Length: 300
Image 1 (cartoon, rainbow, N blue to C red):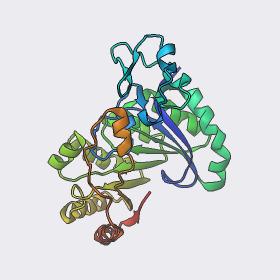
Image 2: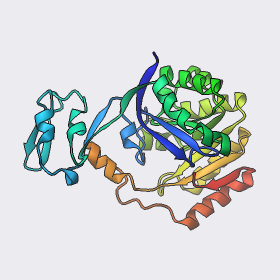
Image 3: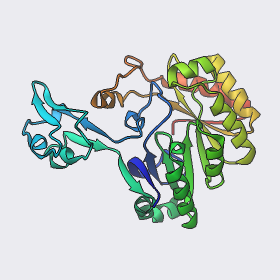
């Protein structure tokens, strides 16, 4: 049975491809983007989050923890990471949902059962399924069978990817994917590595190869003020995308609404103080790219 780690299945999504879609978020990502709005997707392993503001101090989680990994401290519940097995029992018994397990193991059959609930909406709207993350290509043993299963059901598939994967993995997925939502974050290799943790060489090489074999690719650019919104970088993106014959690009304005998630996960939020780009700035960037013969849209 093919199975892997997912952290969310979002029904009735309208920002991850055409029509009404079901977005399946796979866990784990080889990048560590400073602006990631799904920090719970970074680690492949399951995690527990603790919302101290919701905790009423009842102690039910402590009593029911089979590993005795929890105790009461001056500032709420303390988790012994060495003892905790991430069974999720604490979250199940918590009356206020202060404890929550992020991520679970799911099989292709279980995920498809969720997807098929929305099939009538796909048919009426021209929608389908989008596999996102994290980086879905990090789990090919789950992703490829899911793409096969969707194909067998006649369900349109989209793959939201950073492109940071072995070409053989991307190629295998490309043969079964109807639409690619391909992220371009920065054209400068050093800046890309500084802000995402990895160089962009493999990402650009894979996009070149993918464009030669796949005709349906949408480029998505997260616009991060002070990081990748300079004119030189934007012009380089326009030139590169044009050279590949790709005709559609989305500019996605940065937002900071995920900042609270980082605290829940015990992760530092590295863009504290960075504000979302103004509408006027987004329009300026759009006007820089349009002359390259590319259809540019602002937002998902």
